[in-house]
Image (tube, rainbow, N blue to C red; front, side, top):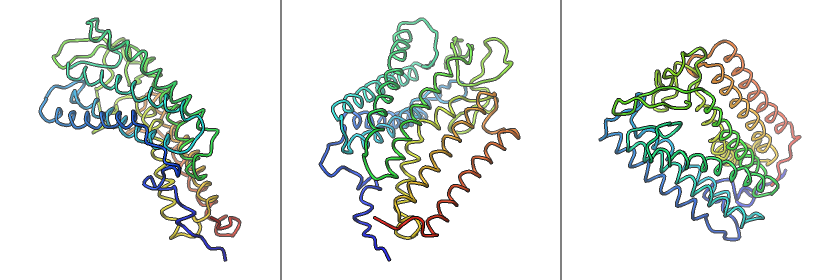
Length: 341
């Protein structure tokens, strides 16, 4: 019977022990980015408590809080990935720095607009602050996208860690790129007229909500919203596929860590090939979920009100995940998958 020395065979599955063996330092600009974003989240939480101004039915400080949290997590994830031994470290360091700097600039403008009680995205107001801010967005968002794209291209050809972790982080990077790209679809939802926190009307060139048949430039965003996320309950919300894509990398990496943690207890998970196969199933299923929520949003359908077609597609994704997991389990238990380090 094969034996396994788990301290040797599972050295890099947990984030605490996933660092490189040759002492590569953490990417400091990305750590600074995450620290700044964490501070913004704390400031925004205080703002939601003491500032009663509202935009589209939510606190003016909710958007900075959500963006700050998302960028804090994303920055830490990229800093961990860039700490792994890999070729092209000079290029990836600069790409990480571009992501860190543009992230702070973009989210900083979101926070500034929140403090002013107005909109950051799609705002057509002609005052100097908004005009300059929109120019920052116009350059910063493509910078984030292109830097992540080049980073993914460099990383995708390398063996940074064990096989399950490689599958998780590489697929996760491409999910993030897909999520970023889907964000551009919001620019085609059409103009709308909305009210700033002081009650004055301002025009937005686009929005988040898809509502087929909506009249002219009438407001679509904020007419009905889910708790916390404030995703639309009256139409399809393109923020949902945007969110699902961007955070797939965290979901997949956590899954890789969980499977490694369970491996000592469950023999069928001890083979790296079994865990890698499960990650492969999860990646396909996650892309299926992303496609599903995008399809639902583009049809103007709220996440909370799926029709039979959406429910059928969701069932198909769930069945695939169940069947794939079962197939990996049966193959491992049958002895086809050797228990090796």
